[in-house]
Image (cartoon, rainbow, N blue to C red; front, top):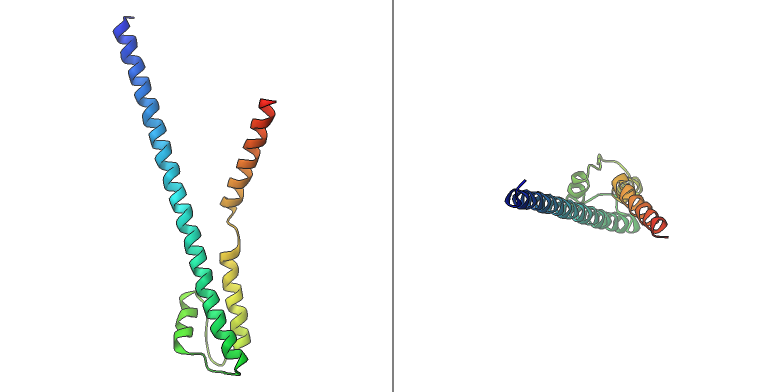
Length: 128
């Protein structure tokens, strides 16, 4: 093999390596963006459900029995059923149930945390 063909082969290897690193970096960056977007959506949903809870609790404390249309619309947007004459304390429980969906940690997040911990343990073992 000539020196030029080895040099060309090395350049091709370096280019492939660079493209692989670039592709993986982009994939990780996009994964991070998606993860942050899901987290933001989860937080905003919990905030909106908290606002519904505050409205319902205020109605309950003031012994009101009629739920304003805007609160009914907000509940339905989260899939919370509303059919009069449902009691406000029962609606509050339904909102709590809807919040649970956003409070549970996704298995994907748990696995990522376990992988990081295990990887750091393995790395420490191999370094010792």
